Length: 87
Image (cartoon, rainbow, N blue to C red; front, side, top):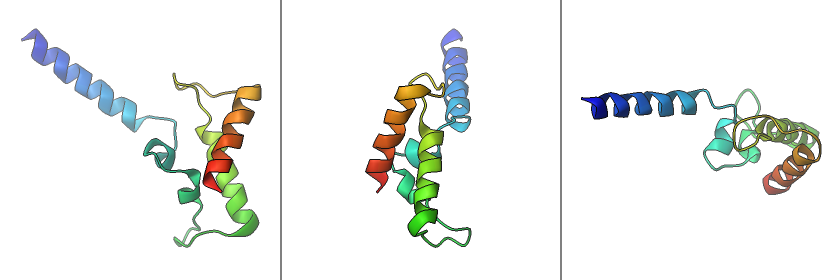
């Protein structure tokens, strides 16, 4: 009986963690912020709008392994790497 309760509790925790994750969906699924650079009508952005959208996505995705937002040099490095991968 204890195993069933523990398995159900673990399944609920995993589901809640995935649902409440602060990481953007494109990054969490292994994609890049380039995939999120879309206009409201679903068309890909270009130029400065695309660059701005990618930078905003990368700043949002700059979190540590434990889910806390990065700061300082760690955040700068993470954002720089993300932008390079998304370009």
